[in-house]
Image (tube, each protein chain N blue to C red):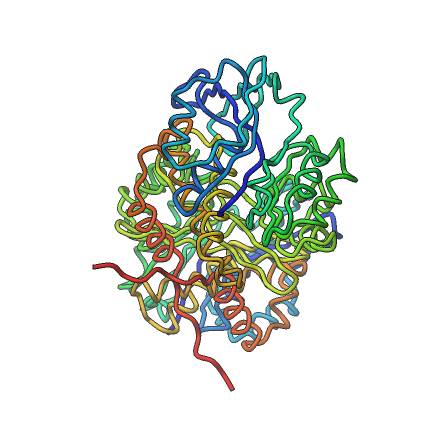
Length: 306
Length: 306
């Protein structure tokens, strides 16, 4: 099987300078799974309430996402309301209603326990640890987190970081987690917690990847219209992990290509509200934009010296 | 001959979280010329006061910079005092004393009038226009500016932009000049003013180059210790123009390589206060860091399709 993702499925209400939407499909696992579904099979573990409409499950199923791990609990679906100014790099959260997500305790169905690729989206690090215990022998585990967990559960979070292969967080989180203002110093410190690959997302400025011996810098795709950055990070992670699970090439070169595919998917996602751009995307468009990334970053090297 | 630069030579007093220096050598033309001197011959047109010490002219001469255009006026040398917080991207200006720079009226010595490459550092756009009139037939003119001139002399500035080949400004300036919050839209608008190539500096996030038909994205070199960002933009411009003047390769590929050399020079400059890192730099180090940029940004393309 391909990838197992554990995270949130939610209703989002979002306002940007370019419009607003109410109660549209959102959530970290939703963005991740939809993005990854362009590259590989995806199974999703999350919880929704009784109010979650059939059209959303139909959409996810239409992307061949396995929903046997999607629990329906009595109560309402997790909902989030946020707003962006012209600086689209950071959302202002106006309201968070955890609802059924508050007591979410992920149970991995036995048929998912042999997942080769596991993505732990941004949830309580103690739940992330619990998921790791339930999955037998994954080849690659990647995880995300957020400022809230860095502050409230630093010990559990460091335990997670010591167990995963790849940590994907943003630059502010990297600085907060390491208590280092310089990003390179922050990365070195986080790698010392035991994770082999650190991917730092920098919004419109792209991504930096750090390992013990290498750094890879990828720009974000410069877009003339950014409508809604919601879900960009999870869409990036979905494209990244989806490509890795498809090729199973875990070399530095393979991981770099996966980062570009992740950046491609994120660049599409922000062009429309919710998952609207991902709903209508073709694989040909994905490859074309990958080629644009290549053209946009290429420069000639110098001849080698003796 | 190589490059002619017109700009400021100054005394800087700078405080960063990592230390402070008083009345050290600074100024846009100084950083530019020193950086460019690693690649080509440079002539400098600027003004200093009676207090400008021989050790600074000796240093510039030791870099083979032609100082016949450096006027010594009665009065004091331009001085600037600034401070940086942990966010090293922006300086807080504490004091600016224009002194002899206030009445600076650049006169291009006749022996410089056939300069092939001309860099107009950040000075009054009316003076920039005056310089362009004095230089006969330059192959490439590049210019810089700042928020102060965008606000106070927008018409003269747009006239400059219509006359130069390459405009090198930072992202905040690009947004201010174009009144467009989106950087890609801002770039399109600025190109419509008549400049062929726009280079947007984004501090620690690198550089974007825009032409009518292409975009090139280059990261900044991720440094573990950034001591003092003062002069990074002019050092970038110096490496960029220096390499162009050396190769005379004005193709897209040549300009991209020049951007990387500019980024290399800027990355060295911020490692120490003032021009201290540029004083001790070897060409071998420059090439080594260029290769690091290449290694840091490389990823495999996709096979071409029919």
